[in-house]
Length: 286
Image (tube, rainbow, N blue to C red; front, side, top):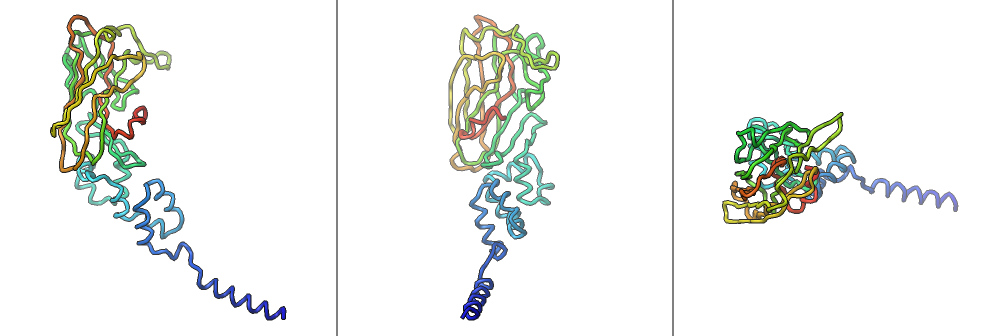
């Protein structure tokens, strides 16, 4: 009897072992379709499962689904048509997630690695700053605290105004624009970061006015006082919405304190930041 039972178990064992499937049996096309619904970090983790998952994680149509609608505009801006022909969509995604400088190094664009959303930095050298050519008022000073390695520094002036323009194709979404400013001159003393506040004055008398307008009729106007000397701060200039991306949009933005009853000084302008509203909490990482 014992021998008979043993034989039956062996038969069932053979049946199940021949009919059971494993991860290697899943078609690559099914894995790719599944990955299209995942975020990039999850895809990279699954690529380590086996060779089939690894091949699926490199499929062009998987990564094209992660790229923004305007990625071809971005590619032409920062990579170029000739180079992109030899790149996979996965490599394009990885390239766009890195800092990409354009317009003679005065602008930097990148995608957020997790969400694929587009962020942009505009340096002070890309802005039109009243009196910037007169060294009695303004200077560009080198600093490691800026991604562009220099900032505009105001010593003293009656009329303070800085404005910028940008033509860019943004993906669909809600965006915010901020000016990155600091009261005080950043320097290093004995290898330590120090902020010289000697020339800071005049910012507590009247607020700065911030403006933002778009070529499709969106407008924002706000004002606030500058505060927190010695630390970089982000001042909200306004928001704009891209509902149906159908080409580049023109942005105009500015900051101004033009009350000539008193002088102002000791201001650093790093530039402007444009990012999706939901990524505004990451500003300090920019």
